[in-house]
Amino acid sequence: MSQAKPRKRDTYHVGNLAPQLLAAARQLLVEVGPSKLSLRAVSERVGVSSTAAYHHYANRSELLGELAAQGFRELGAALSRRAASASAAQKMRDGVLAYFAFARANPALYQLMFGPELTPEDLIPALLHARTEAFGELHRIIAEVLAKPVDSTEVRSAALASWSYTHGLAALVIHGVLPLPTGASDERFVEKALQGLSRLLDAGLRDVAAG
Amino acid sequence: MSQAKPRKRDTYHVGNLAPQLLAAARQLLVEVGPSKLSLRAVSERVGVSSTAAYHHYANRSELLGELAAQGFRELGAALSRRAASASAAQKMRDGVLAYFAFARANPALYQLMFGPELTPEDLIPALLHARTEAFGELHRIIAEVLAKPVDSTEVRSAALASWSYTHGLAALVIHGVLPLPTGASDERFVEKALQGLSRLLDAGLRDVAAG
DNA sequence: AGTGCTATCTTATCAGTGTTAAGATTCTTT
DNA sequence: AAAGAATCTTAACACTGATAAGATAGCACT
Image (cartoon, rainbow over all chains, first blue to last red; front, top):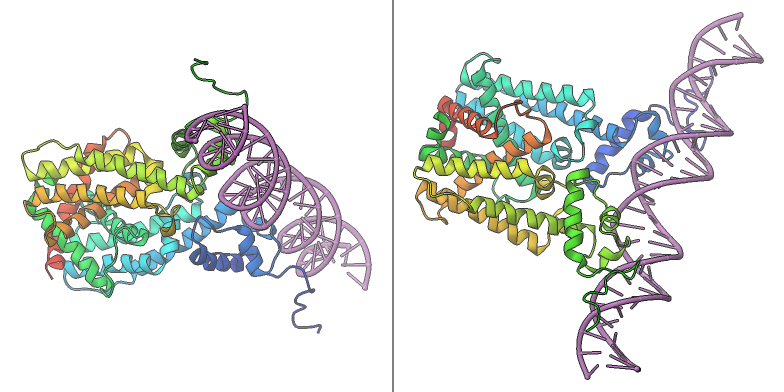
């Protein structure tokens, strides 16, 4: 037998580049943010020439799209990892907290997933699929909470509303608009935000919704 | 007296460049999006050399920041332009609709205001001031709705919650995640979303908030 | 074994970007 | 009219995404 693996002709190619590029891109994403992520920096980190990536991804957008898809898969997984909580309130609380925790733990990735860096034309099928899956997971949670079929209009509109609320909360915190009080835990923050929402409903928002 | 205005030495400077650059930037913003807005394109549109802008704005970020500040001023103005509605529900409805309408009418600007293109270091004082003002307007609305002092903790947490919800709704629609049903008006859409929220609260979210 | 094909990776190379430096022009003040 | 400051220009640099053409490696087939 020859050498186990005739690695590294000194300078030249590596092997399974695609995943390595993705991993490096993910690192750089958290380091420099979604808008300043360059293919060249990714390639250099892997130790490969500037244009090698183009044999695995059509362009920069496609790499970013794959990264975002990965994010949606992880978000979906985080949402599905829910305990069989007893009360509807508990289920709801767990879901919102899981979503919020993901966004807080991966702010740059979250911004990529929902930000303007990826234009509608850049949305590759893998991304759309993963996003639909994650949203489906959210539907399932709401269906449990409401104790209604997942495809009912009630569940759909409730899922839309809760997604909007949670996304808004996460996005504003990540962007730095809402300063997370130092020392306060995420749980406490989310609960306070939910209280505010409840208070609002008591004050007459319900009439709007009913009308 | 000489000529009224010795304009345009054929090729050379113009006069009050700063506002013209801002206006051109705003046009280009809606044409190419926040991430692909280039200073060179802005300069070319005004008919001035590529580097002229640097005598009025420190860098690209500062121009974008000024643009975002302009956006926050307009948003604040839109929110303040509210009728003396009778019921709390009506006030709330008007506020949410005004916010949503602004975001829908200026999607690219809205993405710039809340997106990752402007990093926290780029936030010039004018932007922060305008943003605080806009948020203050929102506080005033909520204070009316709740009939409580603007600086009460109730108003603060309710404002946070309602801003999160409305921002989330607008952001998801602009990003294309939530497909606005064709033919449906924005009013109808917002009302449906509010219904979903109400339904959710009925199902036990209130317990979470109360806990 | 060798031969050729294909995928992969490389080195030019181009157009476009933000930004700085240095020179040209106009405005303003005296 | 002259001096100085403000404004605008051209020139240049480093960096970016992207394409084209050549080099290398792995693989299939004889």
